[in-house]
Image 1 (cartoon, rainbow, N blue to C red):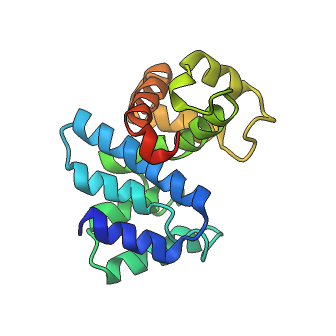
Image 2 (image 1 turned 120 degrees about the horizontal axis):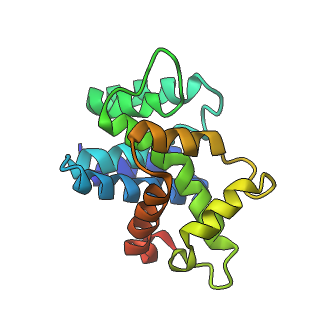
Length: 183
């Protein structure tokens, strides 16, 4: 289990560049939180990188992420990673109990929203995104309408992190990896 093999698996199942970019963004946020929480950066990064790897093939819950979890089990990914990924879909039989699972859920929708926020900036850079503008756009239901505001708010609350601090932390993580993320 390492990033290189996870990246190969992600590319094998995911052709859509936007979805690949999303998973790289979530990986970036997860690695930053792993460092902050003194956790296994590699495992947390892999959870972020693979959380949606099966989405193109299995687009409806519960197939996504249940079928993906079985694929990960065949590839000998840890139960910790698989359970965290199962938790991001809000399936009642897979509650988010671990810090990894809570963090993955908290980062998933927020990363997508932050990418949308950066793409409407004149320079299209994450470095131009500010917490105040993100919070304003969260109130605009027409903006990035497919992003669940409820998941963003619940994710921050479940993680026990102030929403403003969470948004800033993820922006900073993405800024630090902006070139690789194309932001």
